[in-house]
Image (cartoon, rainbow, N blue to C red; front, top):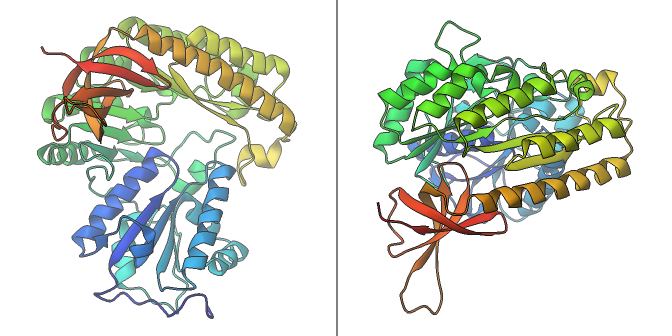
Length: 458
């Protein structure tokens, strides 16, 4: 490893401060929160900045090339840091899983100063790997092993909330997606363990849990345990948690039973992320999404009849292989028809080893992709703004996220940034910045993508 950093790193009692940097999905955030808790329990101390840490963990994403490009940039930053101080640099997660198998890729990682590569099946074993760290070994851990589900922890950025992983991996094999190859086949966590985990979190003051899975509503289809609607009911009736959210849901597995639970159980949030990806049946078939757009619209209409104030979000990809202008117009028509509250919108980029990379041409020109993406974004921004304004006058429940003191005001009110039960961001005034209880807030206006509100007495 030459003079990559000042001195060889060893795990000594004085070198036990860590910093975790997270990229990608909510699953990755949950993994980081869980890892932070495990490290603290094993005698490590968390640093708020990387320059004060002895151990730096980059928890990575490989779903899109842009995410990996950002991580390469961060590796360059840490490579420079290691010229002046000794740190142990760990690359963890999906990008680590993807690159750890390749000799050339791993040589490149070594050149950036990476000391340890931890794939998706070893994320809960990092404390053990640290205690047995040998700087002369390869320290590549990407084999597929039996998976364990670590206990959840209150979120690092808001301890009133927590992510709870209920399944790992994916069986869908969408033609553009690399996730099944990096996280493996779907494995559902035993429901009794989930209940115990959530009840423990409620005892720690957590108000909201977000259940996570690559395809959360296919929970239980791989074993003889209960299915997802029944799991939601068990959490509602057997734990003291107040709010239950979940993501992401696959349209093909969104059932009438699940819609009924959302409508009937007060603890279940009126928030649904239902990724559509395209409005064209031709493209959906090429993507291997296993539903037609007519079925998707019918499911949305049904849940909205049951839950009129539903906050519905989605994912959309433009410029997929073979997408014609007519296909794209079908997507715009879908967006106008459904009127999503918000959407995550991307242009297609090829991911290695996926079906589309091996057997389909990336044949939509880059300038066409960018033009279509901008047109889609402009349309969705207009729809999102209109839907937010329609909520003015509604009353909702809110938990605080952060506080910023207003300047120059005699009443000393504090401006609170909160998160609603429908997963909307709202800003409101409160006298006590330390009050962490759930409040009822009435929407009074809109500022950009944020709702404005005021506390009401009830």
